[in-house]
Image 1 (spheres, rainbow, N blue to C red):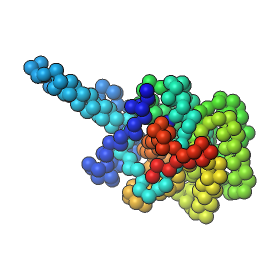
Image 2 (cartoon, rainbow, N blue to C red):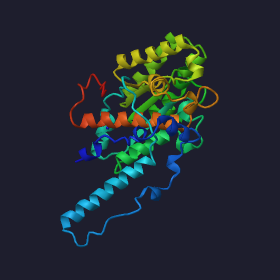
Image 3 (cartoon, rainbow, N blue to C red):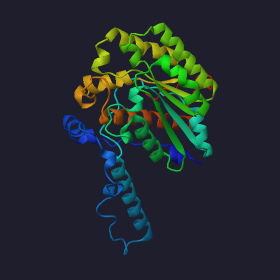
Image 4 (cartoon, rainbow, N blue to C red):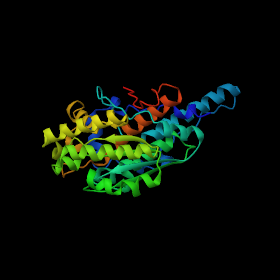
Length: 318
């Protein structure tokens, strides 16, 4: 989203700062299966130095240090080398419903709603889809919380098809948060932007009426999308306007992925599969991490009173 200790932002291990980005991404482009490493592999080789002759306070500090090192090492195996883009205006929104549930110790339900990049097409296994990576990150950040992330992605769909299943697959579940990835197939299928805007705005309003926080996710920056630059830019602007109008969050996936390629010099093939459209394991992992970090910051801001008034829910952490 007393739990303040659980709401501190999750630290990013700066692996890319230690080694070359090209080497990091080349090593991960074949799968990025860092989660496949058993947790035991993350434990330090030396659990603790012999402190039998030291004062209790010194021993306690040594043990605390070992625990911190172990936690950092474990996080490496759950995250991939992934920079936060600079100059990209992220805004997941201030998430009052998620924050309230976490503070009260109640179960939290998050629905990832969308098309094939939500479903996980291009990932090498179900555990490497973005909803599953996001679920793992949030559970590590809030270990005592009951958090469920439901994957409601269906390949080939856009707003018209999603609206037909919005009630049964989203609203009837009464989620605390909905992450709605939409717009890519509208660009590829040349759907009417005006009609898309009406459908997405109506869908957001219905989700809000049910009491859930909402974050929109715009199209991916990939060759199949960028070969239609005018339509792609139009869809990004359209979703941004809806987010501002409905006071909901938006994760700027298009700009984040463009930053990977144009500013961080990551080859397209390192985060997009051969079809030129869908992300690979590394792409999904980095997307999930940045989204998860934003959610954690926003929930934390709500808890410490940084949030804006209740009728204007957008919080911009950057």
